[in-house]
Length: 193
Image 1 (cartoon, rainbow, N blue to C red):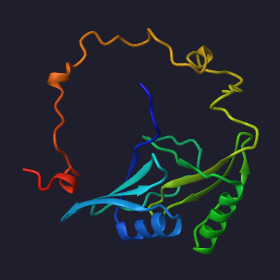
Image 2: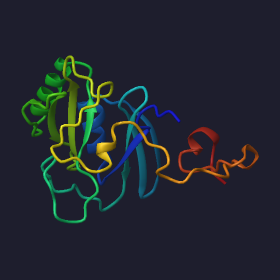
Image 3: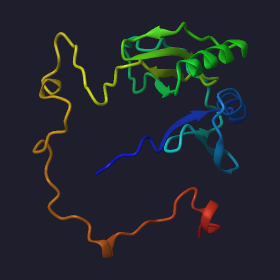
């Protein structure tokens, strides 16, 4: 199995126009698909050739309170922040300047050893990071574990291990593979019936 990136991250907003203005017009991510009907919208923005971020617009969704990136919480929780890679260090500084000029809070540039990053929040309160790989450091090719007290599974190394989960003993035969139309199919195949 080969992954080719994050197909899309799905977020939520109560104001799709404000969201479009931020993600498309300020950050420069193309708006490449939009679905909708009264009370529901689902819009997709292109991050890269392989990656998208999507937003559902639902009535009543309010921006979340800003939470400092990486700061522990003591309540039900599922998401801390998302980091978008940029090609050059100059791109990082350009984004910092654009966010600041538009009136958004943006952090200083932080050196994490393997990446340089800035932190901000979108209009929905979503914590976002923009990162540039540090010169000469590639953790994808040379994984690093510097945890002073790594978990048991982390001590096993970077590579996926077999034998942890049950093997598939009855794969779905090709003749039984059915793909059903879902939201979005009407963009390419006409109305759903």
